Image (cartoon, rainbow, N blue to C red; front, side, top):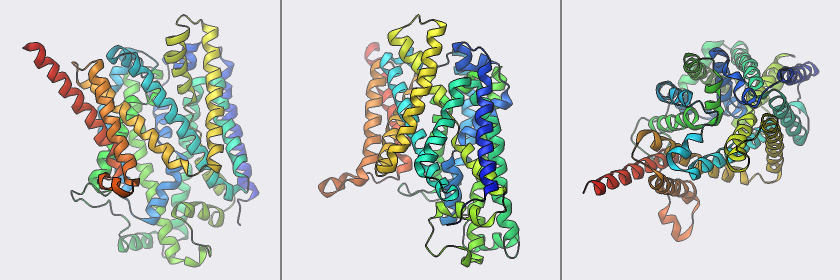
Length: 490
């Protein structure tokens, strides 16, 4: 098995050590709990924007998007095309909403709107989802890096888990934002290297890549038909819109970044910057997959004897075709995509929505800092343990993400109901979320039903799960509110 040259390993280790040291450098400041959570609300919009951009790119998309283009076409790229509309909604409604409230927690207002249950429900869902995210990213990152580095999977998980935990533990949100800036630059550098080298080494030059891609219809965006049981252009577009509205509207990781911005204008600019930078980078990832398809079509002898899965083609290209030093930069970029840490956001919710809400409302400064740092450390360990557990319980991966999707779908619908329907209250929220989650549960689990139950399986594509679940919560909430108004007016 070919592994990265020593120079590439040195580049990677220097990058990881540098990022950790840079993040820890912010610990020199004597931070209050507010500064730890919101960075003094004084960061420039461009830094917050680059951090949002880096947060959008995970190691999964760095490897999976080229794999999707290599094995199929550009249908999944349609997800990125929904970003401008989602960003406009965020700048027009979400950012002013959270900036006006001033709460560091994205879910504090839900208690005022629907009751304490809504706030606690959202916090629990977020924490579970983020643990799933951290564990999954660490696990899949380890699977990708193990053949490149020659290290044990557990070693990679532990190393990356430590790096992902140390700098937010010491430096807080400010460290996360500024580390995210450097990670964003590293991501772009790695993507450009991946883009250029297949074109330089392609027999016939870059033009041959386009010829092969056009001939094989690799640039297709999917069917434009009305079908709802396949990933058509419209299904992916609507799915992307819902997911991106969820990110911008209810995800603590984004809301907390809005609060760190110096002014309202900086916060709005950060959203546009993060969204608009991701679109060309996403296109770059898909073109890398297309270029690799053409490259190996022209030179099939460069592929190993055993068949490679699409997601494994890019790592194979990195370790066999790139000159020493370049591979290290790309692997550093893959790590950068994984090291975006939301641990400080999880710690913020633990302090604001759990500890101060239910245990110590008048917690002092020193006590609050201890809770924040302890929560950061605990969640870092839990995320790492989750990744280690996935080594043996790989079959639980899809189910874990399915359950995370069920919970987060209910969160988006509840948030939008609170914003769009002023008459909706506690009863409308509870009934709406219950109906919405049941629909999401049915659409997620019913395709696996067998026997007599198979008759009742969902006929819709799984991308529409969050769409229909969210719409159900809104519809039920509006209808109940309208019915109560009509009853009161009699």
